[in-house]
Length: 103
Length: 391
View 1 (cartoon, chains in turn orange, yellow):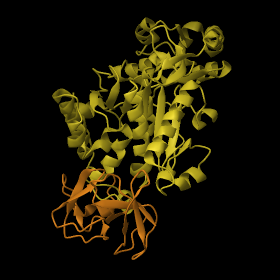
View 2 (tube, rainbow over the protein chains, first blue to last red):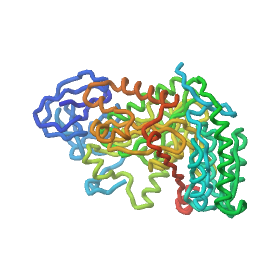
View 3 (tube, each protein chain N blue to C red):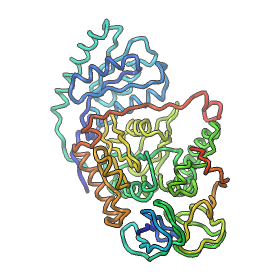
View 4 (spheres, each protein chain N blue to C red):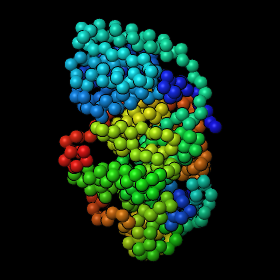
């Protein structure tokens, strides 16, 4: 399985297919270069993110080389990174999102 | 310097198509206008659906489409009693030096007589337009519009950044790029403002995004919340969603914000990247950017889209390999090769840039080859804008 780290500052990568816990994941740059090998701690669905290293609680989550949120709890390397462990850095998310309020 | 083969217009602009535009200023005269356009090769009819009042937003969009260099000549077909008259449009089109004619159904005595008069005028313009030859011009003469629709998790990863690479390349060669959909910039205002060339542009970036957030709140929608589909697809925060969307505009400095209200209709004033303050609905957004002068459109999609345009080629780019396979009749570029690591982002970006040049040279997009002529003018509610204190 593969994942893409979009910017070299990113601490998360996006998996490009449904990924099983423990499966070997090759993390690639957008230019297709192998950056590292990761071992997911969870099942991770296509388009979702995996942490590339240990992220402390309150630390910024970086994707596209930009801040996409802050860790709401400590995230070990290889964990699925999503709304259960990340808050918006700019706009407080309430958890209501999952009810499907559409924009 | 990359060159393309285009049609030079009297005002010095260069078209990539040689269309004749038939404008029905109001929908009342659209059916006869469409029949007239159907009779003559290269002619296409447009209208708007917001009534016959002389609303300046409607005038800006219709006139802007006529002024687009992809248009060789213009025929206006009105009913006759509308407040938004053909003369109002002509007045603003004539300085371009393009041939422009204005007829009305009530004056000519019905649609059959109007059909005869309209076809005769178009026939002559079509003969003259066919005489024009494509000549080489630098791609600095091009303005590219970028749009995304039917986005999924692949959009921010593959299609949008790949189109962004092509947008950056065009700007490096002296061209202009427009991207819009203000709503999909929510959460990135600080980043876009940081890329603004000066404080005024940075302030404009904040102004348009905050105004859009206010509109959403007034509608009872909280702009902080994303859809269930976004979250199921792996987008965690609004910043992440918007960062993926704005990647389609590339990485260059923001030269200006193009406003679209009753007093202003912005167009790129030089090379570089411009933000269009506009709707997130795909067809009106493309309509608006082409009215601001874009000769070519790149449209990224995840789930798939069919959008074309009345006078501009729309190149469809998908980052989802399954969509490319499933909707190949509608997709021009497969950027999904980035996802399996079989092709680099820059390589796909170069392919898209080449596709832009080939399309400018005259190669038909899938939407063109299927005869799609999408055109919808978007207009905000003036009452709502007044109540929100936006005008």
